[in-house]
Length: 378
Picture: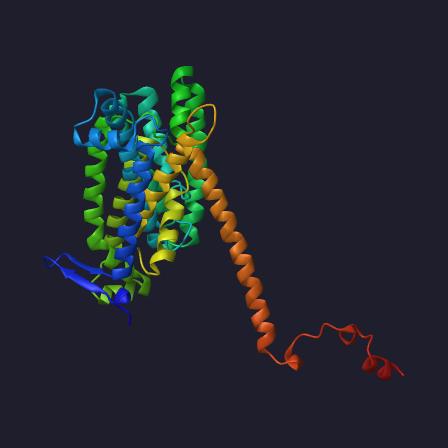
C-alpha cells in the first residue's frame, strides 16, 4: 500500500473521530492553493494596480488609490467567491452522498430554487437585510416538501431526483411570477441576482458568510463517516451504532444551510455543486463523501469562473452564473461523450472475449442466404 493511500485517524473527544487519507488531503491543499492563486490573479487582472501595490494594500502599506481598488472593490468579490464556491462544493458532496446519486446536487433537486424563492420574497417585499433568513427558510421548506414526496425512497435514489426536479420546476414558476408582479427596478436587480452574481458584493457580507461556512463544515465533519457507513444499508450501519434517520436529518440540515449561505449572498449559481464533488473525487481517487476536496474544488471553480467573467471582452462584466452555466454544459457534454466511448470499448472487449461460434451470426448465412440454407432447400 502506497503512502498516499494509507488512512490516518485523528481522534479528539469520543464524539469526534476523523479518518483522513493523505492523497485526498494533499489534493485538498493543492486545490486550495490554486483557488488562492486564481483570487490573486483577479486582484491584478487588468494591470490597473501592479502586483507590488496589491501586496502593499493587503499589508496596509499601499497608496490610498490602490487600497481603495484592492480592499473595497476587488477583495470582497474574490473572498466571497471563494466562500460561496466552497459552500456549494460541500453542499453538493453532502447531497450526492445522501441521495447516492451523482445528480443529487442542490441546483438539480430544487433546493437552490427554494432558497431563491425565500430570498426573492424578502428582496421584493421585505427588508433586504434578512435575505439570508429568507433563503434558509425557503431551502428548509423545499427540503421538507421533497423529503415528504421521496419518503418511500428513504430520501435517496431516483425518487429523490424526480421529486426535486418537480418541486424545482414549480418553484421556478413561482419565481417568475414574483418577478412579473414586482416593480421594474426591483425586478431587474432580482433577475440579475437569480442568474448568480458576485458583482454587488460588499465587505460586511464576508465575515458572516465565512463564519457560517466554517461552523457548518465543522458540524458536518463528524457526520461524514456515519454517512459513508449508510452505503452498507441501514441495518448494517445500525449494527455499528449509526442512527440512519438522525444522520440523514442532520446532514440534510447542514447541506441546506450551506446552500442557503451561497444563495443568500450570490444567488442560485448553477453547476458548481454538481461538478465540484465529481471532479474532486476523480482527482483524489477516494470513495465516500469527500467533503473537504469538494469544498476546495468548488472554491477553485467559482473563483476561476468569476475571473473569466470579469476578463471576457464583453460590453460589461458577465454574471458569474453565465460562465458556470456554460462550463457545466460543456462538462455534462464531455461526460455524455465519455460514457458513449466507454460503452463502445465494452462492446469491443466483449466481442473479443467470446469465441466466434458463440457470437450472434451476422453474415449471409444468418439471413438464410448461405450454402447451408441453399442445400437444405434443395
